[in-house]
Amino acid sequence: MKIYTKAGDGGTTSLAGGKRLKKSDLQIEAYGTVDELNSVLGVAIEEIQAEECTNESEKCKLAERLCTIQSQLFTVGGILATHAESWEKYWDAQTISQWTGDLEAWIDEYSAALPELRTFILPRGSKSAALLHLARTVCRRSERCICRFSEQNDLPENMLESVQKFVNRLSDFFFISARKMLQIENKSETIWKSAK
Image 1 (cartoon, rainbow, N blue to C red):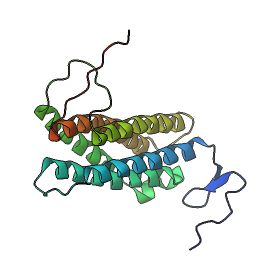
Image 2 (image 1 turned 90 degrees about the vertical axis):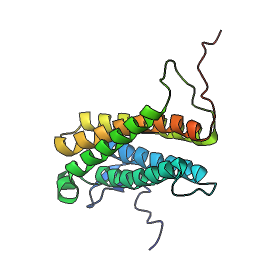
Image 3 (image 1 turned 120 degrees about the vertical axis):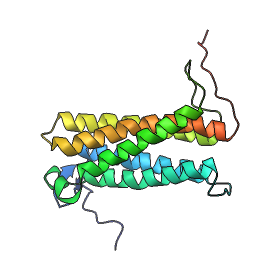
């Protein structure tokens, strides 16, 4: 299969199913930003897995969860890269909702093991934690793109609502995972101090 087709040279691209849109279309921006998030997450996973770890360790457990999320994001990208009329033919909104429930359970698990957050923290402390914060910010941008796409189109509410909730909860998971990563690495959080 050829990597380049030249079909997009004029500034359009195809959705799954064949419908062509301008590359500036909000739907293209939405799934493109999810793809960017998935790539950032891939870098974070590689950094976290850089050292060998046993399957029993908290670090490996976190990395395994991130790998699961990466596959889920690929599905979310697939939904957004398909014409909305075909969404319910290929995907189930209930499955996306179950993923959101899993994220909430993981957030609660990590939150219970972390000190209470009483102030803002800066997105650093270790490379792994900083990359998870980067994933969080790209995730928030993905959410904004999906919301703009939703607002300007008549779309199946069931599916889009499930996707929006998943992406919203995902950014929370990345935040708590960055904090958990510092705990695993026995490193301190960097507390924000007002610039003078």
